[in-house]
Length: 438
View 1: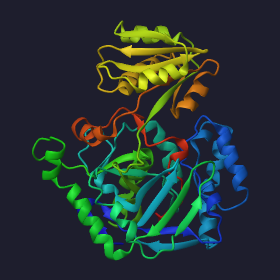
View 2: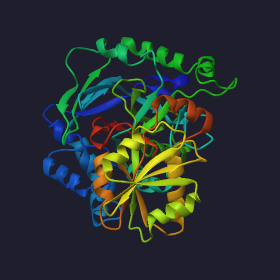
View 3: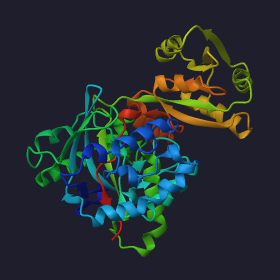
């Protein structure tokens, strides 16, 4: 495989199902979605039936710590081996241009392999590929257990580049190998439509040159107002950081015993442009589970009078106040038991609202005032779940996407689960595969 080490990019060998396979049943949403909605995954099973599907090769996180976890995890390796032995795959070498249409918007992406030697998710990382949010180490073991023995990787990773001139991906629309796509189908359960085209290899150098320009240290120093000789960052994690961290952990563990360009050194991802008009940053809200205390009083106690609390008459009023906040104070919504409050932090110590709220919740979790926190995509979903008995919902504002690269380069990863690129049904679906064993 062709490797471009200066930008940590490899031209991948990709496996896709043969055309007789039902792609709509084959492709399912990322495992870390709908974690508090097992009904969604039950619907996935009903849609798939006995058809080949990536569902059988991943472990939905909705199943973790449930009776379903062990049973579902046990089928992952046998199913990978069955699919490989049954000859349901066809292999392609090259980059793939992806068009994802959802909610009336079209997002462009580039399927490629990234070099894990160029990735470090630690807080003080200065690597070419960096985490944008804090990595939750506790979430890695279950993923490592799945990937460590896996024959295949089936990624849902989205990696961002900061390309305001649209020089890397957008020009590829007219540079595919032919007019016939590799795949072209509707995704299940409202996921929209996805089309993939194999890129003509004669345009690979064009892609590489455009990426090299983006990672030029002199350009980045001026662009982000950095100190001289600050190491450049070319790729920022959008979605799937824990999957990439899992791949990194396994590579670091095994690389001394493997050849330098072993397949497990690389990870298949979809690269997307931060400035693609279809990319919108959505807030990730907090669901407080099994609270045994008065959460409003806990909030007052933690922030020690540095907040103002305004009861509101409805959920829509919370959304209006939080989403259109123009003041210096930070605002978020808190609701439970059919009660709604808009809370303003007057003199925040963290630069982001989500950071201030997460510090409070982590404190209360460590002191056993609350039993758990879940991270929820979608305003309607957090409202529904937050109103359940002994639960509470926290509605947070979105982060401006143009601040992402500069913030990560200067200050390191953002607080975990700060932003999401769209709601759950807009996330990347598993589709392409790649061998990671030799």
